[in-house]
Image 1 (cartoon, rainbow, N blue to C red):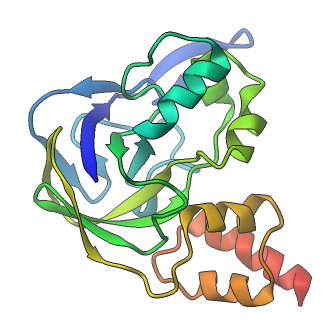
Image 2: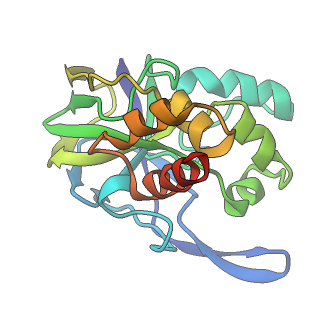
Length: 214
């Protein structure tokens, strides 16, 4: 499990459907050591803090293994790291293996997995295919958010060290299925909701599903 690239950007205004939109999705790789605080990386920012950022979405990681798939789907040359709006381009950390609540040491920082990423229209615009959102979601290649348990620094080339596994073993893909695809029974939902590290938006959606099943 390795950190290939650290990617940051400050929000900027782009035009989408003839309207100015502020977005922080245009991440670009930075070299050297970068400070990682409770709310994210130094030099990085989010535009709409009602749905992005905050403690439980401090950083967004995306597996490099998915790049080849999207390059084929979109018939594009190799993408630059940060293409998917991720702060950390990683390898060896797939959604079917990484679990909500898992804690990792990276550089001198410690982070914890909190929730899958749900794409918005800004991602569709950036990638040049506004209709890709449903396909991206249903592919299961969501990437995942993490909160910062212990502040520190990270650098390209750092190795992720697994500090602790959440005993409930709810993978990022499991959580995505429960949140968006109607997967999982009442017991599965209750198990997921017992994870303290669960991101707020994911928790809200799982609570709503559980209420419908009760």
